Length: 256
Ligand code: NDP
Ligand code: 8X3
Image (cartoon, rainbow, N blue to C red; front, side, top):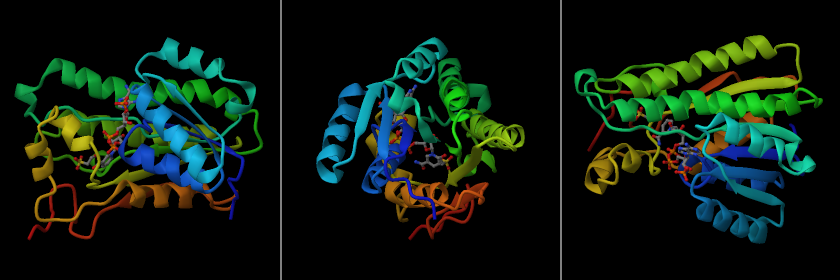
């Protein structure tokens, strides 16, 4: 088993949900946690909490993954020790709306593609040169069951996660023979701010997503991510699809 104590783990989108739970999990394992989100005050507050609770080093900063120049400059200007990134968790992502393609909102499409696809690529491109100089490194992408199946009105969100799936496979092919391992964790329903963001703050509609069933928690995904990141150096868990017990596919969920 690989020990992540004092290794730098970079989590994008750590201000909420899965990213936040992963940042805490890695801090609890003694990793040095580098984390970002657009909501600076949230990641800074989380950093202070993790330092106090786990006595490990944490460095939090504001970064919008959609702007390549900002991403590259921010990562290049990190203090040297924080650029020694062992694990990159490409987690920042979102969905906007649930509209049929004929009713699609252009800005929603752009936001999903810019964040989920281009943002993931921008962060990866900026971190990879540092990873390639190391003896070992690991990129873990958060995809989705929406990267394997398409559901009605899921069109562009599903498209963005299918792109993450293809890009993850492409990364693994191209990085074979380098120190970098590549994995993806593809969850079904997880209770985070995801649905609240999808429905632009409509809490009733967001809560209805999980009515009559028990979704996963961010911590469940953090368990899986930390398991993947701590496998022996020669082991690559290529992909992991994770559902709550009541969910059988993107569209089939047993509700009481
Ligand atoms: P949350 O809304 O709780 O968290 C999303 C995180 O992404 C936040 O920290 C947010 O931070 C960050 N983020 C969004 N846009 C940007 C941006 N442009 N730049 C930097 N950070 C950004 O949702 P989840 O935790 O559920 O989502 C995390 C990932 O998990 C996403 O990729 C999502 O697609 C995926 N996923 C979620 C599932 C679910 O059911 N919840 C299931 C399958 C996959 P901030 O707003 O502060 O920038
Ligand atoms: C989030 C899960 O089913 O809403 O990726 O697409 S789903």
